[in-house]
Image (cartoon, rainbow, N blue to C red; front, side):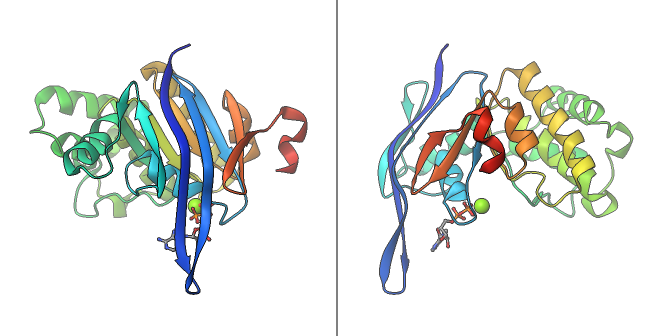
Length: 233
Ligand SMILES: Nc1ncnc2c1ncn2[C@@H]1O[C@H](COP(=O)(O)OP(=O)(O)O)[C@@H](O)[C@H]1O
Ligand SMILES: [Mg+2]
C-alpha cells in the first residue's frame, strides 16, 4: 500500500473562558491511497477541527500535514489554494451549493477555481450528474432540488477535480436514513471508480462499517475501533 496523506502530531487549541481548550493533542493519522477511513467521536471532540486542518481550511497550532511527500504550508496562500482545489474535495453536512447556479454550474465551480472550464469539463460534470441519477436535473437551481438531490450534487462536486482525497464531514447527517444510505452507496462507488481516498466523519455506524478502517477521536487523539466495539462508540 502507498501512503497518501499523513498528519503528524497535530495540536489545536481554541480560546475559551479566558483560557485555551486543547481540542487536538498529538493527533496522528495516516491514510493509504484509495483507502476509506471513518472517524467517529462525541460531539465537540474535534472531528470537524481535524477535517478542516486536513483540508487546509484551518491551521493547526502544531504538527504537519503531508500528501504524497508534499507538505501543506499553512502560511502560504498559494499552497493552501492548491491544496483546497486539487488535493482535497469536501462534502459538508450542509451542501453549500451556490443558490443562483444550476446543478451543472455548481459542479464546474471547483474547475473554475483553477482555470476556465472546457467542453471536457462539462462532459465530465454531465457524466457525474448522470451517475448520480440527476441527468435530467442538470439545469435546476439548488432551490428546485430536494435535500437528497442537493447533497448528491455536493458529493459529485467534491470529486470534480479528481482530488487525492475526499473529506466528508457528517455528509448525510441531515438527511433521512434511506436517502443517506443511497448517498453512502454513491459516495463509496465514486471513491472506488476514481481510486480516491476518503476520510468520512459520521455518527452513522452503518456508514462507518463500510470504511476500510474505523477510528475514534477521543481526548484529542485517534484510536482504532474494532468491529466488536463499533456499536458502542
Ligand atoms: N473557531 C472556533 N473557536 C473556538 N472554539 C472552537 C472553534 N471551532 C471549534 N471550537 C471548539 O472546539 C471543540 C471541537 O469542535 P468541533 O471540531 O466542531 O467538534 P465536532 O466536529 O467533533 O463536533 C468544541 O468544543 C468547539 O466548541
Ligand atoms: Mg463537527
